[in-house]
Length: 190
Image (cartoon, rainbow, N blue to C red; front, side, top):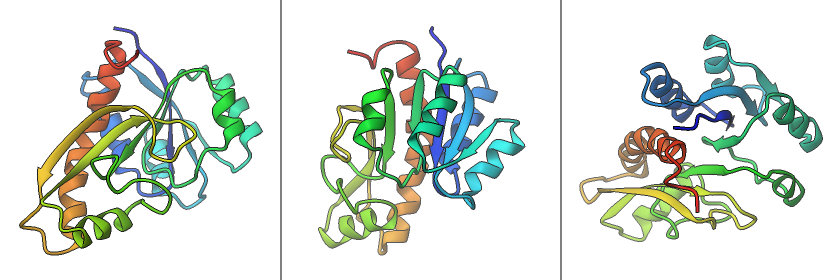
């Protein structure tokens, strides 16, 4: 099984990032996280990285970021609650996979403005009976890349966006490491 040198991009609490770290620590993944990047100085995900001894980088400059990725020999980027749209230039400069976790069953409830609690508000407003999470490859269309994995859950008992979010987050914490495992086994690459 090939192992990746992963850069995880976070903008907030980093619970999906922690799930990746836990799976690596438990020996369920062969890859290692070599960099944690954030576009926000106060992202708690950075503290998780520091606690795990993983180098961090806070920048909004693509050139600085690309240089750091090259220096760390990154060959997989994982967007784990990263709330910045990657630029066309950045995407064109990367020749290896970039994957993202999204808190809905794409293509439903994806695209610009569909992140965090906004997704779950939209799901509730539409009266969906099931929701879930999607791991997809990143391309130039927001939430438009090829789907790698999806998992659903019944949400008819949920009365608020927060209840949906809580249910979906549990799925995310298992699905994202599972997707990395799929890439390690080369099943996810076409």
